[in-house]
Image 1 (tube, rainbow, N blue to C red):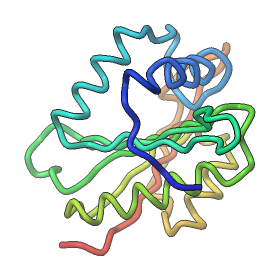
Image 2 (cartoon, rainbow, N blue to C red):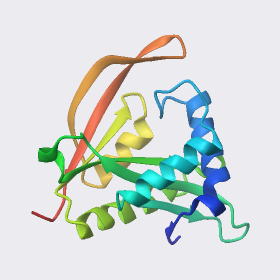
Image 3 (tube, rainbow, N blue to C red):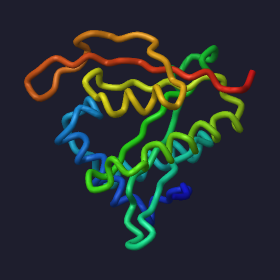
Length: 168
């Protein structure tokens, strides 16, 4: 698998489908409303303007987007400018095949190349697969904020995982 730079006009619809599956069926996103193509287009513009990557992995046989990943500012204040918060989403048909690991490794390399010092992931505390992946990639548990989300008729805990990068 080789990560590629995603583009709205090619990958926007597939990304919207992956996002919306996560919103409607998982606790990977603490959101309720599906995203629209207009939302995705603006999201792409904002990422591009901020020199923030959107990486994807395609199925070699079908050309289908298997998953994508990105990062953005951890917090909006100037002192946080060397820290990014990342997100990784994998199409339900491709989970468990190494797509997330491939994307995460590419994101880590990109963040280091861009001079970032730290990466943070906010993960639903019940997402054992994502937590295990992050730990295998050198992330450590930085804390859990209890009952900060409410979805599917239950309270959700958000665990933060952090990796210091080889810069600064």
